Image (cartoon, rainbow, N blue to C red; front, side, top):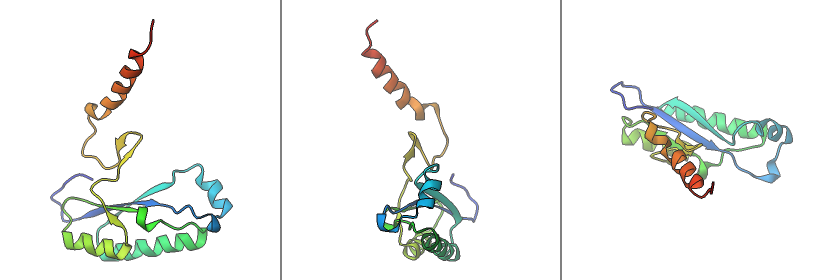
Length: 135
């Protein structure tokens, strides 16, 4: 999500599923082993969408026996979202507001623009390993 002058304000939610063994549905596990444990939802930031997302995640947990972990689920807002709107959505969803959703395979999930310098850590790691080799 890039900063914009548009009136629409966006949010991203990184949903982390609970690992409660008493609620395991083996069909769900079999289907989920192919997918990642974290899911990212994008929505326009308003209280109606927050309530709808809360209902969808609750229904998801009831039907599949695997609930979203509210303390580990993060909520990211675009920079032009007002603080009161952020707080209202966070209270409705009971999720933690964060400045970044972290990294996946070494790249920030939410980023401005991918640059060559973003991947310098790969080159540095390769150089450090190659420096230990003796020819």
